[in-house]
Length: 329
Image (cartoon, rainbow, N blue to C red; front, side, top):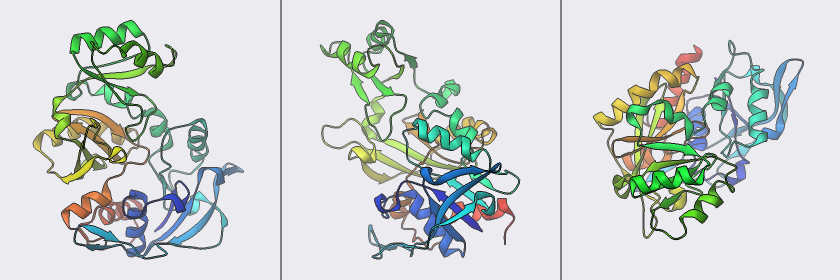
């Protein structure tokens, strides 16, 4: 297969953590050709999407004990080439959020890829439709009590009714801007005003789940099916479990309740072309659906003891699935 990855600048990625690196590495190990590009190198020319890309080779990481050992340099790049993305079998859209105007415009450029020739993961229209906070609202049976509002009185009333709540910016990432709210906090009104930009932007507010102290589980879904999970446990005085905020990662099973939640979201994900997704689960509840650049593969494989070259590694499972979808040997 030929695969292209639309990513952040390669020199800023962490090969011991970044899922894009794990996927590129797995594709290379399986004999596929891999290219990389960034948003600013996308174009539409005569009705087709093109990109200035570079081929990339990523030597397999080595699992030694509980850590990944990475070759230095950990990647080798070819010369830039302007190529049509229809030349690819698969295009991964894995630019990290937030979904800015430039990000949104890039999804429109990707609409000019012929879906009969090239599989885009995740689908541009699906990414546009799936705000990572709001998308979960359609699964009311498995989400905590939730409101979305920019009105201070509405938010304050909800916090008072719950005695504790969590506020999330709709465009946030990696735990940024998430606040723990209590009705007796003298700063409550100010926190609401700052988060809503003085009532101009809606935010999501959810009941606080005490199970959050035990961790925030990331489950990786491939075509709606769970293939691995990792638990992110808050450390110190931090109530957020996100890896970016210092959360400690620990191995965790996929429970029957987790599978029930996955079953609830599967049909919608497939309908919207969202084939590689990370959902966040706290206790018994779905809290977010991550569709832009879900991560966690490196941590799941490391905790499970799966070498990057093993058929059990999540990266290889994803590339093997893509091989089947694209009908390549």
